[in-house]
Length: 367
Image: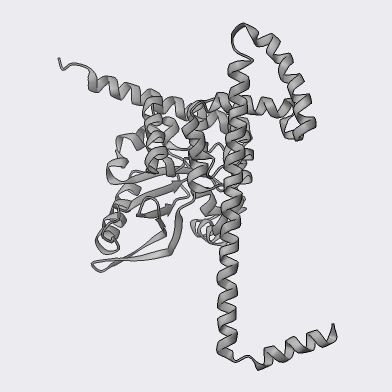
């Protein structure tokens, strides 16, 4: 062994630097090929297993539990699970078969399952299929596919009520379903899918009284967590972006770029409740960015005003969406989950009611 090691050391010493670099490059390239192949094999196995589980679930639902045979079929599932688990493992136990049945029920379209299974594993699907609302279920499935969430991240998004905090949840069901269909078929991401309200900033650790600069500093300190709350696709550009207009200097709190939306995102932090004058300030920043920072091929910059509260009617009357401005509340301390659920569900209900009234007024014949 000692002779062999000494011989290898002698050979290494005799190799010229160019030869060593050639070997290093070759090994790096081969290593990359091996990792790529392993990932492809893993993805193929994952997709194959997911398709298998869906097919098993559909088979059980259609051929055993259909119609009047349901009670008899329940006993069959139990018996089949005992036999299959002995032969193929616990994944095919009665509990596993019921997961597969729910999978086939929640996602009846084989083509959609095939597309999702390229990014989502079986553990992802088990989290999603038990969401009762179809729109919410489709939202998490598509966003998980697009942003490549881990199972842990998916659980956090569901637990943080991400769907209820998007503008999509406040739209009529048909419009929201159409938007998700465009996302599924064209990977077309819209601001209504990207921006949230409220933003949960409890990870900043801000307690008691604090100033805007404290929020800004905490965000920079916890940038990874902040971007996770914003959503995948945001890239940090600048803090306190200097904007010179005439002889005046203005400073934008935070500037991001969203890769999927292909547009700059200006963020202003406010400790107060939203005020109408915030609109003029943000419009000024957006027009300046459009003139001086906007590149060809990009969409117009969009603004996000994060504030401690807002009056929904006031925001609606200002028609901020026409100026490319979003207003959202932020929470530095999370309320109890039931309180948050009620707040979000009330906001969704009121938003849908306002949309319905607005639509009725537009459709009403002129007198």
